[in-house]
Amino acid sequence: MPRILLVYHRPGRPSSISYVERLQAMLRGLGIEAETATIEEAQALRPGRPLFLLMFTRGGHWRSLVDAGHEPLLVPASLFANAAAREAKARWGDCSGLALAALRAKRLREEQMEDLERIRLLLELHCPGASLHVMDTMGEPGPAEEPVAPLAFLPGRLSRSACGRTSRCLGAFAEYALEDTAAWIADTAWRLATSRQGI
Image (tube, rainbow, N blue to C red):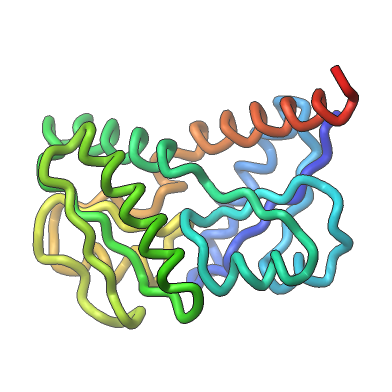
């Protein structure tokens, strides 16, 4: 049974941890043993197991795990783009002009912007005119454009801010793409386990 570490940013809304617990249960059902930890907790853990960071871009949190000796795997840009576009089309029939809303990183801003632009480009494959809205602070109003896709894995302050000025907002990724995330993690964990066995 593959063993992995599932790492998340401590949410501003404590009830949001239930999504991490549901993801952990899904993975267990797929034969993956997943220990969960916050970013701060993971920094103190010994590296070795595959670490899946439930975030979408590089930045200070990603770097802190790298500095602790880990090799964090981010949620792929293609996974976010495909799931967000599918969900927007299912809700509203169209996803043209989907605005990607993110919080600006405090560190590694250039790397974050590279990752954000990659996600936006992939979104544009499905949603013509997809745009990028980067907020400087958590309390800053989100984009006024519709529809909006917050770049937040768990419900919390970022998803609330991003959705604050629009009625057509996808909400946090875990609210509509938890199964997609479980499938990606399981597939990756199986492939890593196989490669380590030399098969």
